[in-house]
Image (cartoon, rainbow, N blue to C red; front, side, top):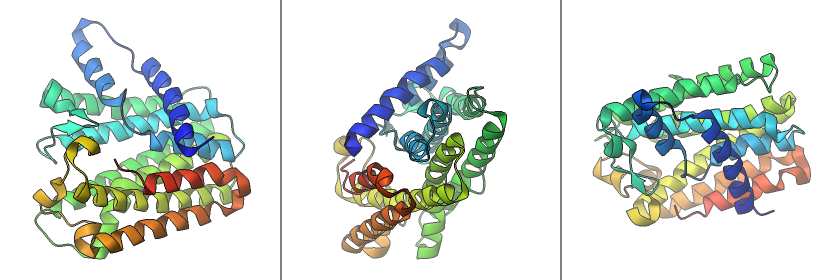
Length: 292
């Protein structure tokens, strides 16, 4: 199976599960559930839930036990995109090739849809298919990654860095929180679902941390080189908002070298898994060479 086929297969599994978790309610809350489903279904590469599923697999776990954790991660990711696009944040009208949630449903409904996905994620992590101990570990891991020490912390660094030139250390801290923390948590949740050991957990975390940095560097490259229709979101917005990126800080050529280096480091981290880690290695190459 190729990395692309692996992504597609896991995306289909996660899509079906998300539809079951986000049940369409009666008329009183229809607008909310419509906005939630619009935001989380039928879009995205599903990289994070794929990491959860595949890290569970290479650690000897059952994919069905990883599925609730994978869905929880994707809900957190989708909530963050809704809020990131709001006028008070990046004010972006396009996401995943269609109008952003607030552009379609209004700012207030979008805000509530994000809140609802955030809280639903932790309910889903407690699916009884997994033992209580695993669910508690997953809740702790994901809440830390999504909170002020992770994703939200990265977002505030991002907001405070607008119209400023930041140094390499600040840029890396920003993206370690905003992007890397959730990607690392996604991998860790897969190991937790498999009840893997410390060596497996550390290997998957290191893989994901390098993958996350490569993913962000590649995002910066694409933002500077690809148009909006190909990217699926507004291109060039970092430049318009005067944000520092790996491209503005290092230049396009050096940024590409950095992405390749992080790809290689991610693959090296998979060494403890031997041949079992090949699909995740292929995924790293696929994401480094993507065009959207």
